[in-house]
Image (tube, rainbow, N blue to C red; front, side):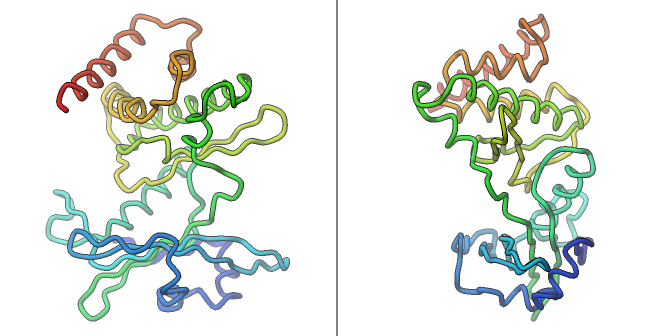
Length: 261
């Protein structure tokens, strides 16, 4: 069990703000919810957004996620209730270890208080980033074609890097991909909402599952966008035999899903 984690660089900052303890973070802006508590699985989970003073006098924004009696079970922890935040935080650390861009971890802790399992996750806000759907759902005439091409290509290569590490997001929608544009054509992409992410040994299963989920939510994409994305993901100038097989498998799942409604 991951009981407590404090990032080395953030420890003095949290101390400076008197936020280096579970209790202090649990009480922080307790009723000022950024996302109101979600009650399910016999417990609840909510998010607040707050600013923290940095040593240089500037401020940094962080998200403080709190939950109580919010568990997941698997064959590995069948007899030990484990907070869903533990799985999410472990995935954040693992993604970063494997070089897959995601959130910056600040703090994690799980405690049992009065018989209730509580967990806290603190991550730095992705300042300057925007959800990918806000970029690419716009009509193509409203977005410069060159910029749109760079956004789609960068996201495709980021997802390929995740899958190269045999990591499956398992809930991959455009809103879980954040992008930030820099000078020139520079674009950075980050993956969030890793609660259901997992390592899987078979690349084809990972790819089909994640790209199917992504395609389902990409209604605002043109055929050109979809082809450009897939070519960048496969690192090809033209679709090869294996790429066509993979694309057909994704399309079959999409058609089957539509028929089920």
